[in-house]
View 1 (cartoon, rainbow, N blue to C red):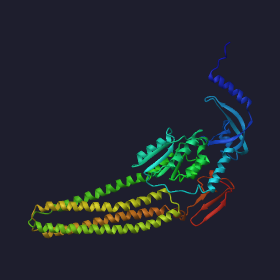
View 2 (cartoon, rainbow, N blue to C red):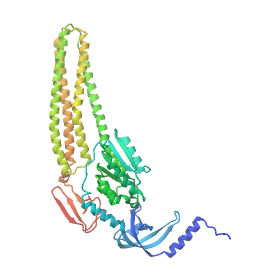
View 3 (cartoon, rainbow, N blue to C red):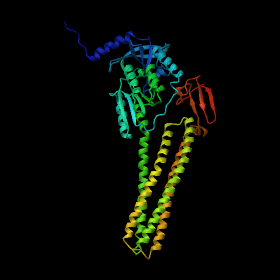
View 4 (spheres, helix red, strand yellow):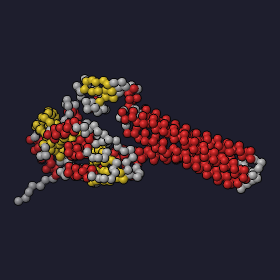
Length: 488
């Protein structure tokens, strides 16, 4: 007895005829999951029945224009349409023409309940500061995904003197919850100093990321004794772990950039300062060498040597005065910075403002060292030139030499003042940048920012609905209004 023989296209077309002929204009009930618009304007999503089965669905762009609302993840709906098979992939899906609410899915109800409980306990409002220059970072992630490679590559390229400790975890599947909880609890038992803990995974469907909506995992993440960063999924994915973490970033790569931003900027600034100082020093040395060539040998070595020693001591005194004045000025600026810090904290500044303040502190600490180093080099150069001059006897041009010494003294004073004024201008410039970045100053110039009912900024009319209450923050006060109509 021989079995009938088919090609792939033949059997697929037969199944297509059977399915599309028998499942036309039907109602299907299920929970919406992974609703995502395509680049062509169509809407793809999945209807799920707990852990029993799932059905891929598609609403064409032309049908979407007729619908008053779109399917939302977690909603239980009744979808009306027909089954269709796409032969090239052999996949079948429901082509939806209409849908209506059938209640809220169990998983989404559980998520909303956990979210409200954690919010009531204050788990979303506590935000500890992230160290601007972390030395030891603990990373919780899968060692087989792209997320860990992205983080390692960015830290290697942008950072320095950073220790990255990777704790492997399972990020999806049945064992994911136990793996994540074990890792978090072991981190809390670490006795050594840790600057920040990052929990991370790459993007995926809402089902792939759902373990990070587990209430127990979110509570344990909140209770980690070190500052935490959540880098889960992509920009549109927000989980309970994102909400309880001290800082939420859009992607794993963004987490690595935040952690290395200060080191990257510091390295760049140090290079620029070194280049400026090298140019200034080389120019000054060349000018002094040309002036010393004007001296001719004469006969009063001891007197000339005494003059050089006296002027060297005078230069030391000038250096001490410069250092004292700079320290006094820096202390004054430090007090002013403390006041600015308090103002910035009250206005919830961005990370860029924090980094700018840290750069100013770095300049404040390094300025005396640079000046002392410069003065020490100049003193050594004068001693070297004095030994050269000592080999000759100067008599007729002692007065000329005294005039040159006075001129050199004035030049050193002038260069010191120029360096000091340059550093002061840098401090004033950074202070001005801080004021310009103050959100309240931006609002006073006529700008405004509007928040939804969850106090999140509204970036597009697609994020609000008719009848929704919104709050607009202006330069002086707030405006609370109700949406009557949205226009794209």
